[in-house]
Image (cartoon, rainbow, N blue to C red):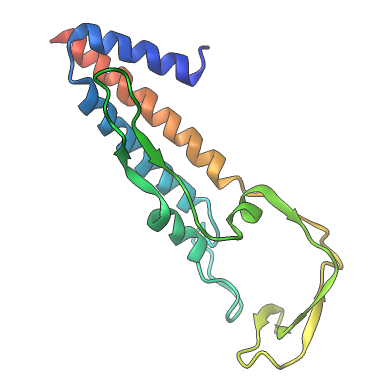
Length: 172
């Protein structure tokens, strides 16, 4: 199977030969695929799966929301008459996004204000109540690979849209 870049270039050559509106097709494919990637990243970012957020002041959903607010879905730099690029970006500007995506080590350390209340991990509202040692049982938290899943969705969507555009252009 050809690589994603080679396959995309092949579709674009066929569209140029068919006289299709290549710039518009690429812009639409890039935007639609990026929106699909944002949805996939959001769906795979905790809290997800309909699970209730457990514990007070511990999980906000900010990382899941950041995919939509920080990503650039409108194609930039689209000047394809002489062969250019349509740039979109799937991103999260939160500092801890890479740790959730790729996984991370947990060293044993004390966290002030963190308490266990009825089996739930919670942050004390005033921050002065107690604290616990973390990293004693779990030394590594595996990654969730939201970005990779979203990138796969992007590639699948672009392939489908370009195949469909080539099919339509050839039948006109």
